[in-house]
Image (cartoon, rainbow, N blue to C red):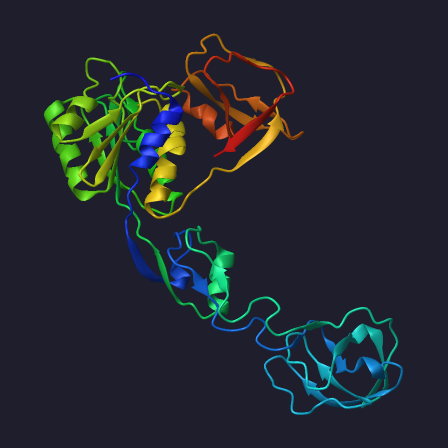
Length: 393
């Protein structure tokens, strides 16, 4: 199977996205879920003309005379009196404006004449009234399907009484690490062994999409054991992520295992650095990603391919956040045959610098990176000061 461009790989991945369907949750449980319906307002907002300040509701035409205070209107109480000529009502922020009043003057713009009279001493600038329906009209769409639900969206749902929310179902995602050299983080590795950092990293990346991934453990360099583990994960999940065992070594047999498990492999090499041996395949209604064993490669290819795919299954057309900044120093490379994804840090002077990065196994470099920049196929240099797009993690 020939190596394909990253753009083609992304097209294939996103073209195989499926829908997980929908479910109904309480609005208070919908944080970080994907909204699957338009939400309409069942009321005008504000629902009545209300005061924007603490002050006195009165008529503009009376501001040159003493005003009699006829009642006090706290928030939550409906006015019992209409304001007539020479009158006003003491009113609190958020309280309904009484009939007859066309403005609210602020407390600090008045002086007390006696216990029941005030005089306006300011220069009138605003009505200080939030009119009924000026924010939202009954029947308006307040939230549209396909958005990632944030805390402010939950407040909007509460304000229109939408307490049962239709959201995209979460896909079931499995993580398997491959390699007999791996031990769990709690264990001390032998001289030839290493701790399994990829699974922890991938499960954390999955959690950022609002999903709890399922860890299936370490598959040793044994084809039958790996095949059994892959078959189990495929039978129980919508997406299976395998890290390691996808390159060209004698024990890198994950692609053959996937084929024996009934996975149709759509690509197994991408012209990208890091992450060349990334594999993608389909199985029934499920999907398999084979990510490289080097942790920087697996981290970056998850962000570039897996994360947008997971979001798409839930109905979210996710776009990574990118900012444009100048690069502080010249960046050069020798081999320009692949798209380069370069980890960079954002500096205090709002420029970017490549992190001290020794290759795709250098996982301790990533905590100091704020994102990645791209250097296209055929390009060998980014000149100092050039504006680059920083895709943030």
